[in-house]
Length: 74
Image 1 (tube, rainbow, N blue to C red):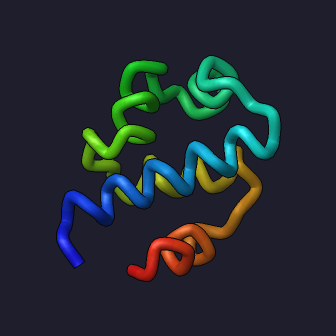
Image 2: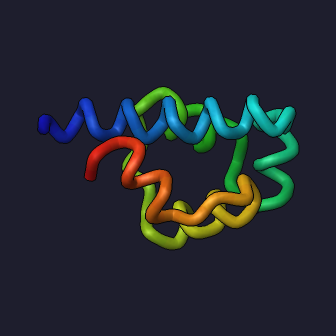
Image 3: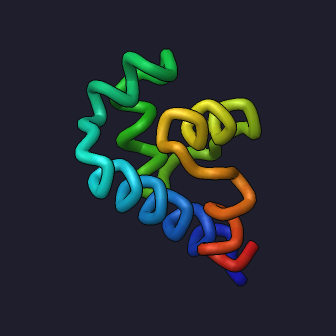
């Protein structure tokens, strides 16, 4: 699998989960201390998230990190 495709799939999975929960990017930003522009870049597959960022997001989105990674077949 190409790396850029994995980044896009990760961003899509995070965005879908956020929307499903009814959370805005602003809310996620406040809860995780990740700026909204960085979150937007991540959701659009344009950022390289660290493990720490993924763990913070998975906590706020109420999903285990391994489930997110399984969804995108990593």
